[in-house]
Length: 337
Image (tube, rainbow, N blue to C red; front, top):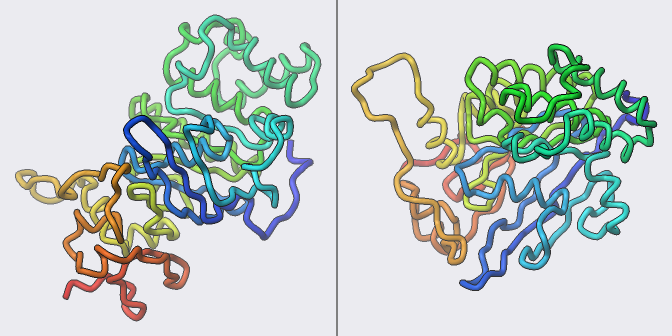
C-alpha cells in the first residue's frame, strides 16, 4: 500500500511562522504564536505540553477543521509544498482523510453511533480510494485483522457501543490507516484506555505507521508515552514552541526551564515516597492577555527583565533547538546565576 511513496529529504509538513487567534465576545485569544516546525518523512514526532497549550488546535489547523471566523490564521502550513490554508475546498477534501488522517482523543465521539463499523469504514474507502462496496468491505476486514481485531467480519456488523474502548480505538486506527495516508496525526489516542491496552495500541500504532512509511504527529501530555514511541519531541507552552530535540537527548538533558519542569514532575518508582511530587508553580496564562516577552516568565525561576520584555527566539544547539534567553551556547544548559 505504499506505491505512492516517494523518497523525500525535505519536510513533509512545515508550519511556517504559523499563528492563530480566536475572536470572541470577550476579546481575541492569541492561541498560537509564530510556530515554525517541520515533520520529516517517516518520523514520529511527539508534541507535548500542558492541557490548553494549543496542541490539538495546531493539529486541527492542518486539516482546516476550525471555522474561520472565529479562527483567524496567519503564516503558512506547507504540505508537500502546498499551503493547506489556501487550498480549494475540493482539494482540501481529498487531502483530509486521504493524504492526512487524524485519530481523535475519544473514539466514541468520532464514530457515528447509528451506523455499523463496516458502514463507516467502507464509506471512507469508497470516497477516498474509489473502491466498490465489495472491495471496500474486503479491505476494511483486512485492516481490522491487521490491528489484531478478533473476528473482523463480525466486527464490521457491530455498532460502536457494542465494542470496548480499546476495540473502538483499533477501529479508528484501522479506518485512518486504510486510505494509506502519508501523515497521521494522533491526538491523545490512548487517554481513555487502561495501561495494558494503552501499551498494545501504542505498539500497534508504531508498527503500522512504519510498515506504511507514514509520518506521525503524536499529541500527548504523557511524557512516558513520548519516551516509548517518539523519535523527536516538540514542547509547547501557552501557544509557543519552546524546545525541539531528539527524544533521548530531551530526556537526558532538557534545556528549557519549562521542559525541565515537565520531566521533573514525572513520577518515579525509586526514591522516597514521603516527598511531594515536583511541580511547576503558577497557572497557564489567559491567552486573551498573554504575558509580554517570554510567555513562561511568570512561572520561571530564571526570569529576568529581558524575559519580561523580549520574546526569545528559537536557537539551535547542535541537533536541537530551544527558546530561552538564559541558554549558554557553550554549555547547552540554562544559567542559574
